[in-house]
Length: 360
Image (cartoon, rainbow, N blue to C red; front, side):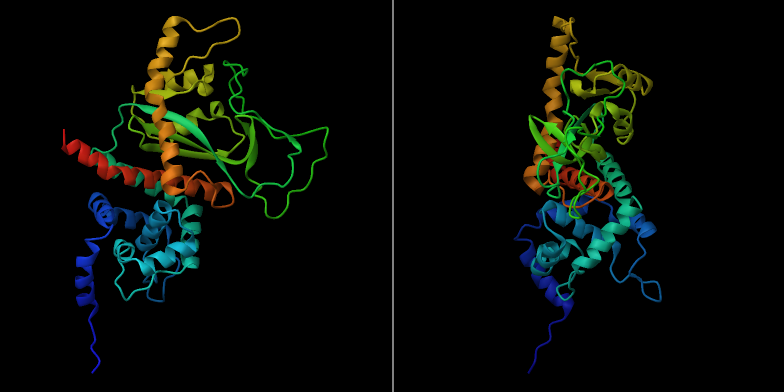
């Protein structure tokens, strides 16, 4: 006699097992986030995969949760599909029963491309941050700004035939309005065509004496290191040239201090912060013939005690999520990666922040 186990019974039995494995974090995230608001945003921009009666073959929230798992665990499209099919906790987080297979990798890829094209990931990032702020997890009493280079494996082979900009050159004029470097042909070497496998939207930069090819992610964090705003550029774009765009991405309240290193220091940027009514806590920069005063040195030291937190955010994303390496080709897709990593970082730290608040 064949025994048939109903899906509801199987789910209830396995739910007891799920509690004993690493699903606590997923439960915490589900309690923190109002997924109905996320679903509403996704459904405005994701309509592919619908049948004749308008029902989606795969729920947009399911696919977004797959993107979350993919980022948290550093998985490819193929790998996250396999893990969801193998892992009870992964499947439950996505809202799947034991009998339901995960969407295939091509469906996930099309979903990510559709939301990238419509810039929906930006909206999702802001909505989740809005909810975390409502919970008191994100607090905007101050902000820190910095940028980090993301290397891409899809770089030109051989030595570069271009003059490479030096990132944050100390000899740069602190009063310059913009020193965004331009990719210029080296007159000593002929320019050669890039091969088909090269990411042509990335660029070279020289940082710490080493040549790197890729992109930059520009972050604004709060004083806890939680990411408030993200801007993505090619690697050659100097931070001093796009401060206003980066600050605008974070929806900062007025009269809070904005901290940054001396790479952001310029008269133009001082005016931008003044116009936006933000306290200017960018490190003071000495110029030729005018060393820093004792007061300016003390100011820099005080700012430095807080500024390191944004660097800790970059480092944590690299360690926890295998970040810092380009997974995709092109600036728009890399911006999606940067947004997802920032979003997942904020969610990953949220339960710990809630617990620390409860102990006070």
